Length: 137
Figure (cartoon, one colour):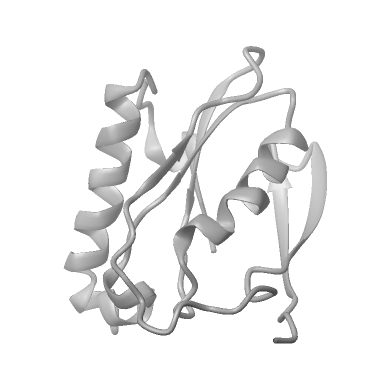
């Protein structure tokens, strides 16, 4: 199976560094019947700098564990941050099913909140979401 390349420009630490990542999430054959995923939590690799959270929304019927390498690369590119990453489990591996319109995002919100609660139990100190939490996917 030929892989699909996804480009994801990420601004790290309010523009201090710009990282462009290539994800080859489709480079291996997909399981014939998708199973439900579990949320994934990556604790910070660095113990320096301000604590931030990256919520990485999966989709495209790709198992969310296929995004771990991309999330870890983002952490590695931001050594000036204590960057946590959560990759929530989404229904049928499609975030669009969970959030077909702004008024129908309750299921996705529940999945993200559950992933963030798991991070809090693991030691993440939730701050002001507007300035301490980023969304990617």
